[in-house]
Length: 498
Image (cartoon, rainbow, N blue to C red):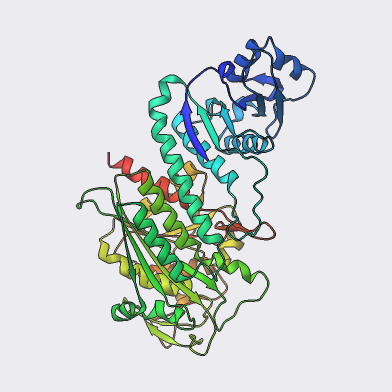
């Protein structure tokens, strides 16, 4: 999809499809009103006949409107003008692109960014229109033997802005495109089957990302070097698999050497059987999504590099496969982590924290301003928050506030859970410094308490995306979350410093 912006009059656009809005009670937006006046009240006469009321979700496609050079005029219901907010705007944009998709139009001109959204300027509306449209148009057909390319599809969308906003919106457009591409990369990686998307494949894709962006340097550490570093906790997960573990590091240099980087650490379990503590077979195929944390780091790095954001960013992705075998970790085994702390593994299906703890310790060497780990860590988070909010736990309140704000702005929301020392008692072990599970109660919190033991030397936040990283069932698909949240957070950090 190609996106661009321009300013101009709705009634003068020579396009396959011009998109304009109608509010409830058949109130025309300024763009629709301009078309109505140029067409001798053609729109208002139709609306008076009851063809459309203006409720969100409604649409009306018109061909050959008198006096209008566009082949089609698509009217989109925008609801009550006073009620428009971020969520309504997304519904409106998504509905518009769904309706355009039903036509054979190859390009469209949309005046919907001209809607008045509470507390949002043109830049926000342009950036997120791009992201919403690209997300709606996403398809994953890499492994389809027959690709249905007979129907012509939308290739170009032009977003219309006022002339005085044109300059500022160029940056918003480029940001929206960069983030959309980062989200697509995340979804593509996560949607690939585990026989294709192995730890080695992630390492190869990281190398390709480094070739795409000169500002991104990629390092891949193999198991022998991990062993030398003392990453025995991480290696305890991969030891049951024929696929060797990889520790992938991205370094994006957009600012000076004196600027401390934000470090993103992503859980990369390319398939999770549960190991010896094997999972039930139902929906186990969806455990290919257990590397969505790592995929989101790929996407965030690609987005930041694509928009050339003047910050420093490090991505650390431990990539493993968790399999049962004669060499797999057994419940009751004890390992010494890179930090020197010992861990009794009571459940091999609580493996994400075992790879993350060594990756978090490894992150210290970058002298980070903050470390954020992203992981499909606990089913308990899905029980607690459902599929709508990402779980957020942290040892630094200002970092929490920034992430919550970023999620609100990006429409990719998180919700804070407590990280109290009372929960730590559940991780006590008679044989090691800690156990890797704390029982059924507060499972998301005790998992974060485990990780917190490896984050004493820096500001840290944990994002549990088990409920938000993918959609289950017949239409299973990765969502690309929380790339929008992460990138918005990084944008905000840059803006704070300038």
